[in-house]
Image 1 (cartoon, rainbow, N blue to C red):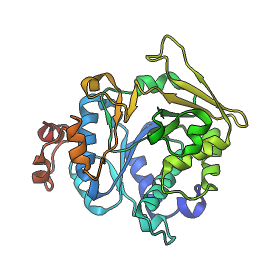
Image 2 (image 1 turned 180 degrees about the vertical axis):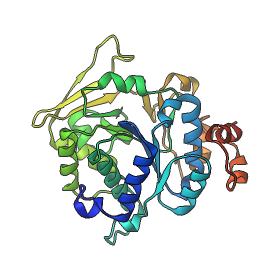
Image 3 (image 1 turned 90 degrees about the horizontal axis):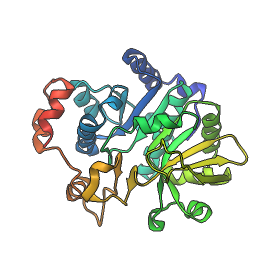
Length: 307
């Protein structure tokens, strides 16, 4: 992807997104998701969890839709969204669709930072169990807040695990808007193409030579958070403990103890719906399909489709 340039900022989709942000009177920090209609029910499951467990984070929620159908449905439900089509952002002929989606997401994140927003980027299968904002607020001096993955089999790229003994997950990622993250985006913009934003993110951070130390502040809920400081830049990263944000280490017997549960949505070819149901994380009924064309207040609509 390319770090924001004049040609991008003045493109029709960027102008439309900026207008939507201005009209919505968003605060300094956004909660950001990107979705296509193929994964719309997964987004609804995410929204239901957020409404139940982290409602304050929905006050500045922006959903970027990759198609008009998703945008219309969300608009009918009072969810602020905008349309950004992959082909409008990525002009190159890239065969792998997922690679193009990653490039679009990184482009949008960098653009939102460029406009001055701190962005909490969430995957739609990274589900709130509690309001994580008080945890994030404890790290106001950091540039980036993300989470730890310690299972070697799930750590990509291998270079990060070899360097640190863990890797960082970008399914829950807070990117602050400041000169340090601007440096990060510029480096990532020059980075090699990858099918995964997690690979790009971890690869770039390993080149910046981070030193990691545990945080033992009694005011912090877990003593297993790590603080990383780059030895050749001023970038500071907080990696939240798996006790806070679990990634393939979630104990289904104590889901309510986590702040975010982010498990793999696919196992042996099973669907997101099936996998999340098996983990007691799918909380919407099929009733949402009957309500596609109706206009209802957000709270009532989510209440009606939740088990």
